[in-house]
Length: 201
Image 1: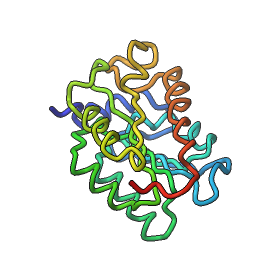
Image 2 (image 1 turned 180 degrees about the vertical axis):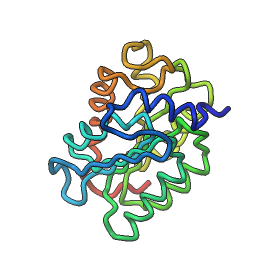
Image 3 (image 1 turned 90 degrees about the vertical axis):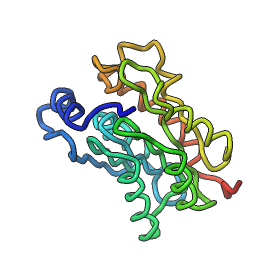
Image 4 (image 1 turned 120 degrees about the vertical axis):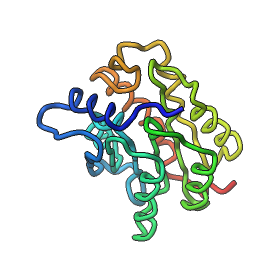
């Protein structure tokens, strides 16, 4: 089941993002890491409209961040492909997608294989409208984490944020400013995987 049509996401983002930002489907916001947390390129966080308000706070925690309204998985994967081609792919890549369309088992597998054995793919489970997870993306992400525990790390935002209505707008997905604080704190946990030996397996 498709979650939010792009026009719906665009309308919400136009309301939620401060007036200084021209947001909507296709709107991209990026920020470079403000601190050094790894021995190589800074960890990369890739997101959709949910991440837009969190771009600068995540950069302050040490991530290179790229968020775009209505972004789907393959568009996020294209960023990873470019980083790899330029030999700037960090050990840790966080993908927080799934608000728009599905995340399939093949999507996850293809990205895991593309980044290679010396890298870690951390995936944020996406919430459904109203805060549920009935669409199956969270289940597929958890299954991938169980199948490849050293290569895929599950950031289970669905479980972590359950019952926290004040963190979200009316759709149960997009973040309030309180939600941004907790979202950034949660994603920051992934920095434990930013350095280390091969993640083969």
